[in-house]
Length: 405
Image 1 (cartoon, rainbow, N blue to C red):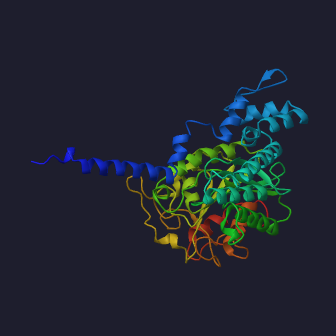
Image 2 (image 1 turned 180 degrees about the vertical axis):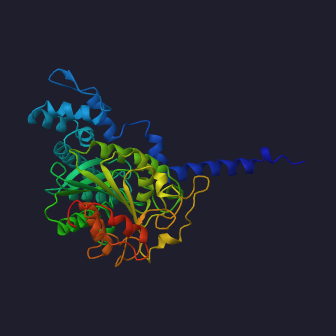
């Protein structure tokens, strides 16, 4: 009887397969995972330096302290001391919930400039492949765009595919704050697009801010383009599970709880972003008054009441949106539950008239954008419900309108 276990040919094939597995790991990001234990990321290095740092002979507060405690710490400092911390620990301060928004903008400007210089050097590094040099060039140009005068970068992490958040308007003066939560294939490089600009977070946020101002110029609003989580890449397993949503939910909840002032907050959750919003809904503070989802594959719930939130839940979907062909179920962790625009779910269904496909909800001139803007300024009675949603219209008739009637 032949023993296949001792066959030299089999041993060779096993070796080849093992090398193939290693190659695939390296080609698909395994190298990053393997090396993550060797060197700290820029953000980790900055946070570590903060933890071992001091100011005027006193230890700096724990980064994991409550945002309110960190806010009190910064309030005791003068402008020069705050600026000194931003320059010493730019990524730590720039991503610190509890630090003043304006200080975070300053710190992230410094961090972006530092990373821009790193990528400019990598563009001409002969040890990199042509593809690697090209990727460095793309990152450098993205950092340069984010450094443009007047941009307010609230969060920035260059690690991996990158995370970033930007504020449109003034957080400190806002009476109402809107947060745009995007879906799959959102990262630092496509945070902003020239073509199809309203399908990217920056374009969505700018469009919403302009629509809110047009709807009521007297209401002071701010909009956050929030891509400060690692979104799924493509429509693979990550997009079919809630793993990325659960990680992002922690970050979104922390952001909302650390926002300055007492302005009410509305979340606008597109595509996979609505999965994240469904996961985080029960943890959110009461200042979150509205959760509006568009083109949703599900919110990890069978009914709106299962979200256990005091916020109004709104949903819309364009008739041409391909997301409607996704199976609305959840089995063994795969799938995201019931269809939010189905009558049985219990959300208030909004009209998405004039929207085009899965990425058209923030296009200027669409009813979807006008509806989002009315919610953003609190003009609930001006919202246009879907034609056949009597429950939405009934709910609106009893809703007090803060803002334009």
